[in-house]
Image 1 (cartoon, rainbow, N blue to C red):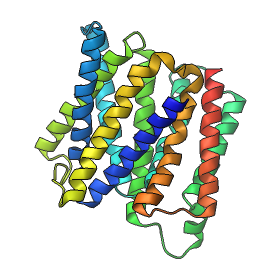
Image 2: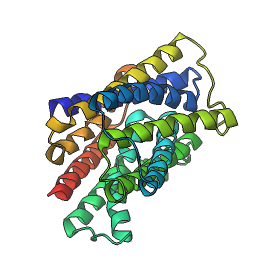
Image 3: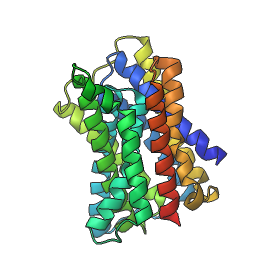
Amino acid sequence: MAILLCVGSLFAANHVAARLAFDDQAGLLLAIVCRSGLTLLALAGFVLWRQPRLRLSPGVLKWQIVLGLLIALQSLCLYSAVARIPVALALLIGNTFPILLALLTWALGGLPPTRRACLLMGLILCGLILVLDLPAWLSASASMPTDWKAGIGFAFMAACVFSCGLWITEHRLSALPGAVRSLYTILIVFCGMLVAGAAGVVSGGMDMPAGSQGWVALAALSVLYATAFTGLFVFVPRLDMARNAPVMNIEPVASLLFGWLMLDQVFSGLQLLGGAVVLSGIVLLAYSRRR
């Protein structure tokens, strides 16, 4: 659990560093290229050490490519959200993927959610209403700022895409070793962002930072993400993920602390209560699914 708490905190710090880079005019695609490039090197070293079989059958290769493209889109959506709204809020919305995964599994022929799961999903949605401060927005004369609307939309899109990626992982790529699957996924993300940057898919996506803050933030997010991602695979045999995976939900909590310390992002008491409700519901839902 201590290792997972550290990994979740590193992922949170990576998103805070990304916001610092974006505030210094760094491009979204450039940030993803930097972090996926360093992670690719670290994972390649890990795979060379373990020496698993890397060849994929045509059927598996097709789903692996789809998974890589989905994770690339999820990364872009989540960073787009982080650039527009507070980091903790983006991660809280992005971490609602267990609800979407349960509904997607049901829609594609799996078991329907239990009554307990439905109640927890409702609890999570109620918590999100408080986190987004929707009652205040609805009662105020001014509408929600455009950046907030776009940021919330990008975060929700990240959760949708990630749930699709998890479904593919569980139902189409479960026989593939985790290190191999992750290596190919990061490789596709890296190449996809380079192609998107060359094609100009995202305006200013490959822009360089304006000052030293941006460069330091880019280096930091790359090291933080690569360390967390690779460390997860190095230690995964010892982590008892079936029991302890919900501990990873420390990420929004850590981002709340880091966002306050480094970005002066402050939430109201009602929003903090809503965040606690969302995290509690997600953890309980994760534990009930594993049981």
